Length: 203
Image 1 (cartoon, rainbow, N blue to C red):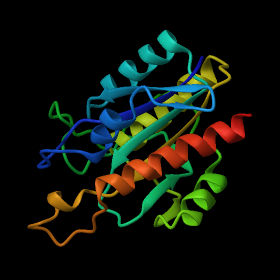
Image 2 (tube, one colour):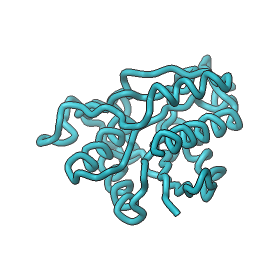
Image 3 (cartoon, rainbow, N blue to C red):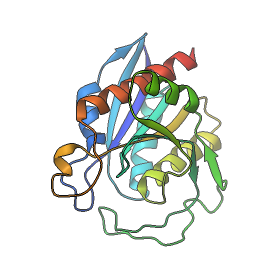
Image 4 (cartoon, helix red, strand yellow):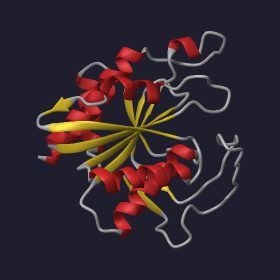
């Protein structure tokens, strides 16, 4: 059976939870149209996040890698591009806070997602899930991982699709904050749609 790898970050900063890793617990091992969903919880840490994901890619040779991270946005963000820069507003989970540093000094300036971005967006909207196509994944570890995975795939000439999805915070995370949120059930449904749409376009 072919594999789809879905990664999600652990909690970071002042957050004691992360919908990205909560989604993994629910969808791990699911099967869609002959594809098995393999999941990987990754640390919100520069470079270690890439290293752990690349190790899993080598292990299972997935057809696609869908990375998921949390944002303070109100919609599902289908990311279009990852850029070659680390520039952290807050420290990662090991206290690193790089400024204006290249992820890979020999890497390309940026990589476009090779997931079917427009089709994913259309599928989410058709299901009534708030979504948009985003042209910036930021400069924190989310963008770092998106760029790092695409960089690995490009440098090794692998036939693997990859990209990144940002999901909103959960309601219980925003009770004392003026921040948008999305219930976990809807976030899980959104990620499942991303997986299914990706598979449909692989075929």
